[in-house]
Image 1 (spheres, rainbow, N blue to C red):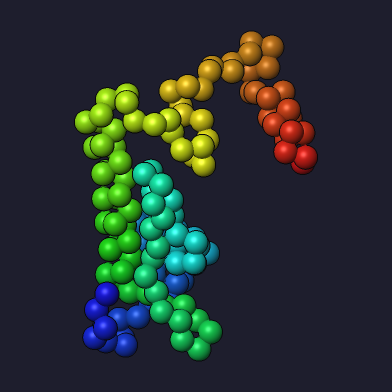
Image 2 (cartoon, helix red, strand yellow; image 1 turned 90 degrees about the vertical axis):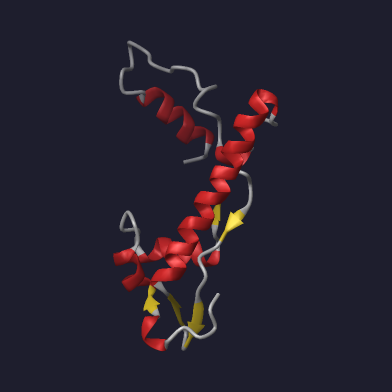
Length: 126
């Protein structure tokens, strides 16, 4: 990152959220900074930021760089998958089941899937 970034280019996470694609919340940007986003290949990508006076700041360029890095990581994963065909290892379980392996749960007696939802909530202890 550029160490010579002028001070007036720093944005609070609230300001940066208003300029980010998809209008994420400031809390979402905080998670991107602190916890990162897990790219499809399993690599974690972080939003570059600085802390000063108990606040976190980023720049519009760092938000764009974060988006580019995450996109490139995802594209590399899917390109490797395309080149290898089906010989890649199974989907990382951190992402949950693949939509290709999910069975159709439509039940004519329960068109909204409420029974499935209640079962899942019970399994999670909620």
